[in-house]
Image 1 (spheres, rainbow, N blue to C red):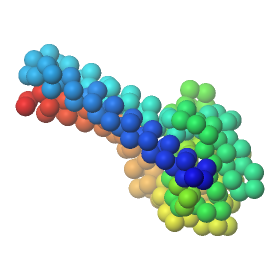
Image 2: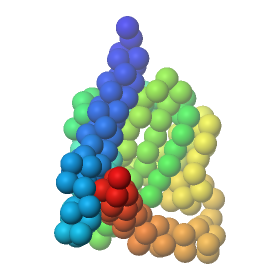
Image 3: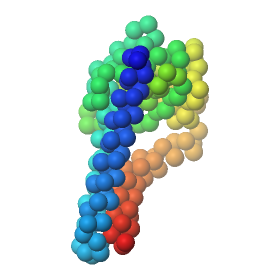
Image 4: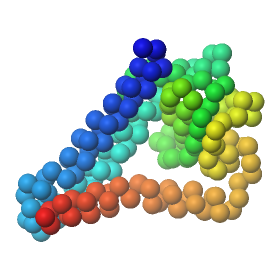
Length: 190
């Protein structure tokens, strides 16, 4: 078994187990307790578990700060779920978004995946942005999200992309909270 196949299998197993545990943590308590769970207002706890669990799963694929290097077109990064490698000359998808950061106010995150199944989320400073931009310009990618095109400077940002990004900043963190609470309440109704 090659290293990339083992890395893909390890990543898929990690996320499958993570999603299963997260779903059980949200659905199992209301199934056990029943209607009293909803009456107590506890679905908000399930919502918090969903929001925090999703953040932990996302963070598990994110390279540690200053923990990634590029050599010969290969990105090597250390994450919570192990070492990862992505070939920048054979990119399948590139996605990017901005998030709040303690130190600088905002941070740019870029998710890159190659065609062999390697995947990592990189925290990219302005001085490293050109590495990813050059890789996409030189070698292309199967899919580059509109936000990634704007953040990497590949296309100018349109006004509605900026508006959607701002709306996403507000809605995306709240959505798992609401979805987890609603799922727990629905499970308790049975």
